[in-house]
Image: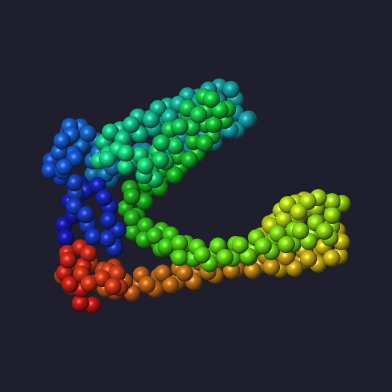
Length: 301
């Protein structure tokens, strides 16, 4: 199937090809001026040379702005260097502000884009510079701009890896109840152990309250072990040893749950990919699908 190179969407290997936007016949873009349509093609597209160049330059500017923000936090820099970094940060903030405005203007539906994940991230990339005018150090929040580099998957035609992302999301959703039950059980254990350590050790060993004991139990069962509070009595040390051994299970159980769900998800995905439409050769149909989701032909396999 021939793909129009002006399309603004990169399909994965398991998705049907979507047609390019016909700006002259589109119900929304046909009523807009030509420059807004071209802005949409460049800003939201990535297969045209201008669109790819725009995205690559944008990623470079994002990385450079984050490096500038990180350097601003280094106290050893000379005052003159700090002035240069401050100027560069406002240059980047101005560029991101203009870009965000153009995205709102050129988007098919500006409100939908503003509420989308990347729309919110694009807005958050602009705000830290202005927040820093009122809150000292607020400009450090600009490191959130790195989230915008996620567009590299679209720019470098790595959309096929989105399938792995979706598999991981489905896995976490399907195992959420099992993990929730496990977390509740762990919370019960650390609460009971924390209260027991408060009774056994007391304030003399640093267990001045039950919440303090629960804090120690959480640090111990997660195998972090800060060492700021340690049991001194024999009974307390025995209880601590049992909790440390339990900590290995805390790590293994959720890992096993997620791994089992990922294995099951891959198996179902493999079975789905085996269903191929005999008319358009598109794979990836659901197990209960009766017709091709691309051409509408009846699925025989």
